[in-house]
Image 1 (cartoon, rainbow, N blue to C red):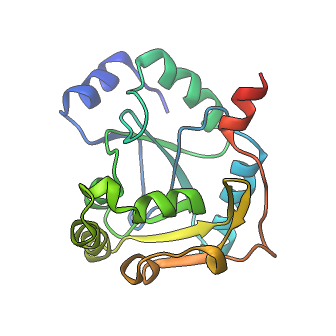
Image 2 (cartoon, one colour):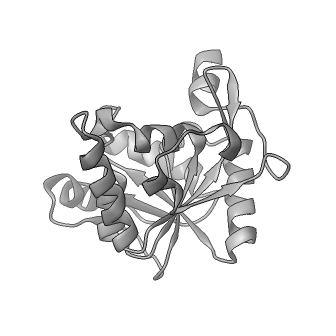
Image 3 (cartoon, rainbow, N blue to C red):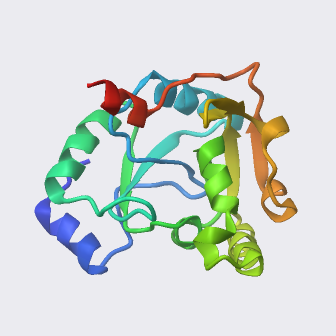
Length: 192
């Protein structure tokens, strides 16, 4: 992907929803990819095998829990992320936004992200607002492929996730017998 300052500015200013070529019914792997590590590679490969589709990595300029990315940061992350596959840049911080821009998408996420996606605190502490947002994702054809992750030093997978029925119905879970990699980009940044 050839990402220019003008394209970044168009995203920042809201003149476009995304940059990058993407197929219909995409298999999207959202993340910060800072840095890309072998867990990302294994998730991407296994997701492609399980669903029979090519993955696209998605990096959002804005994130619910993090500061916005500037042009230089995007450039650094693109260099790494493109080693895994095609990259799409967006300005969609929430999954309900991503599902509107990319209908019929399957999103590759970790258990930690599934927990946050299901947490009412991200919906003004209102479980009904959460359920409506998840229903909007489902109505857009959105689904989630959920990989187990260490969360607070405990491995969380389908058996250990207490998710709302609304979310659980649009999730497919990868069993830990197929994938378990206890590493995170945050952990790697702390070690540097």
